Image (tube, rainbow, N blue to C red; front, side):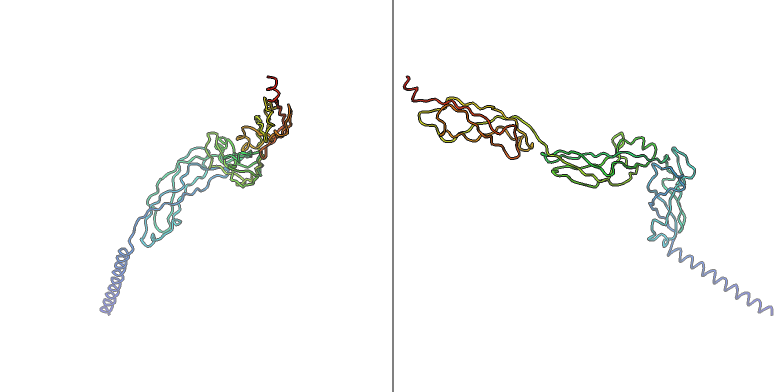
Length: 314
């Protein structure tokens, strides 16, 4: 009986040792085939428990987290499996240095860089402010901007209280380059600080403004001389001794593209074949297209000499 018990004990001991050896071999093989490794990930930094009505500045968008785990656990692992955050519970307005925390369900976190974040917490506020239009470029030379109609004409700007104090204006850029007709566009409003820098850390509602731009034709006015011209010829015994044009200058108006190149105005030619003595002739002014004047005609005074009569007198 004692011998049988001793044999059974030996058998169970042998079985236990086999299982122990097998476990050790399994752990050895697994450690060789799937060793513990470390790897570094860059992940988004989240904020938690921020008091309602407050906003955070200067918080890093991402942090570097070094984790440890098995090679298979870390292989092709998405960054979303690592969660990095700062706990902002019960923090007041002002500057704070907050510890950066990280969690990793597949292993352990070895290091977070930076280990802490320097943050500024402020009250969140909003205010209503009018929107203006800022012209970019120049329209067609013959046109000018008459007005901009903005819908809506006011927006709500929200952000930190200190940032709203630095707000100078909200505007929409309107490119009028080479435009010659009224047009409508939809633009994103931009906030500008008093120091002239864009304020991308405030929100604007609504996010789009409809801008209707009206143009008007430009009219330029100048005074230019008029020039007499002739056709035909006088009889052989007559010649023109003097010519006067009254008025010799005329005020005209029209689009700048035409007026800028206008140096003088021509008159309808006077038919010399119909002139036999001193005459005052109404001559019509020839105007370029789109040009108008305060008068349509001028007087041309001709003094005519009879060369035959002068010869007889001599």
